[in-house]
Image (cartoon, rainbow, N blue to C red; front, side):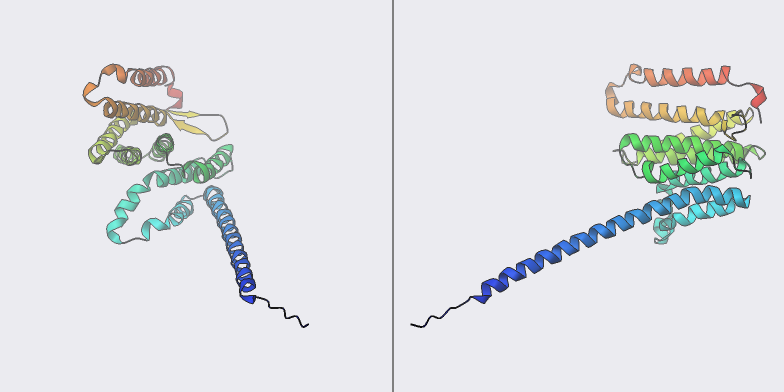
Length: 284
């Protein structure tokens, strides 16, 4: 008796084809992960290069020009748009630009010799680029704005110490406008143009009042210099935001008690700074 065996190769082919697809998908996922890891590494490396390089090149060259150009080049995407979107892009990135420019200018005005302040600024700028700037929740947005107020006001006060007061006033208006817009653009407010302009005008008014009595706190030979107005405007920006949030939250049922705590806190803190820490020895 003869026996004949028959094999159904079609099922085997389907089976093998499925394995081929699975292998292909596995290779694709692995390649994607590898590219993501590589791109993340490049992203971190470039940000570290910008944070350290902007300070290093400013100190070595003895000029802020190269450092400022490096910050601008890093924001090339702002300018890679049609002309009608350019101003909108610039406004959206003002806080980041203020922080970058301020780090470079503070490094320059600290001197051409390496000091602890240069290391602090470089490390902080790296932290800003890698950790603080990518955050997008409400608290993070407020922190970003307050940092820009503090650093921007510090750079403006030191940079314009020997210039006409109108320069200082205009720069502080820009800082107030940019930081207010940065916070409000993340809120539910549809039209915040007037609010941002008012904040900018208040910043300009405070700058004009403080310009005739500029106080800068120094810390030994570290090179750290903190203008009094930078602290005052940072406190004001915090209180201003809390008051705005309370007015939006309570609206028609608004009472002064809703803003009593932040207003009292800000007034007392600013009063202590102005009255007890305004020794003329710091006057520039």
